[in-house]
Image 1: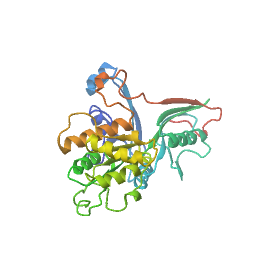
Image 2 (image 1 turned 45 degrees about the horizontal axis):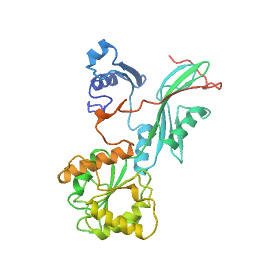
Image 3 (image 1 turned 180 degrees about the vertical axis):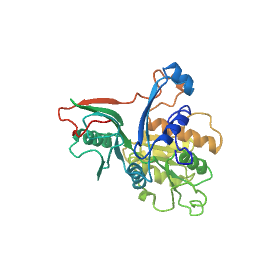
Image 4 (image 1 turned 90 degrees about the horizontal axis):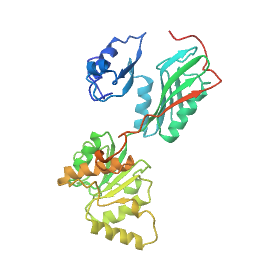
Length: 339
């Protein structure tokens, strides 16, 4: 929430934002953060805020002056397209030098500390584990004289979507992916099609060697050139890449022909990685609806979901937040009690 009241993002479905903004305006340079709990199981609280989701949520509200180190760190991870981990202390009690708002930020190449001592090894170790696994946790560190709670958060750059083919049906796919904040690279061998002015939302538009395009284990790749030789050349490259999702637009018979030609060249175990025909079966008609079906399938694959109606799902839609309690004999360095 900026000084004009403009809001970016959300912490709920709209029930809590006004109160969070109100509390944020009350923060000062000396009293710069607050931890607020909203309990939807409390009838008075639920009625007052219009909560209809039950459950409870803790919101850590911070005053941010200029561009604080935490946002600089996130921006650096996004710009350099590298994973990071950030430990944010949101509560501290007892004899400890650590305060709410203190942070440890880590990438594979660097570690920055803001208020967390170098000899505080537990938080450092948990941040390293988060960096390695990509799993966020809320952890309570307990000693005989103190308690510190921190969110150990995985910072991941936007999902890289690689689109091969710059026909008219690529435009809604680019726009849909960008609306989700994904990083989009568009390739086509035809300079008249692969133009930045045709795809202003794409992050990269190129006609260069497709093998020079970076493909990571987080990448999703969509082949939609509508040109058999191009599809035939691209598919083996993608199947031999670490991409998590590979889909190809076109009739099943055409795809089967390409796969048969690839298989005839030698044994391969990667053919079942291909999603073709591409997209979820939602009866899509036209390029806008096809783009929606493709995006939905990519999300389902990346999230290890079947893409079926939610009413058929038993159990919670989202996995429960991971929480841990760590007790250690080595106390967090004691300086003075929190007020």
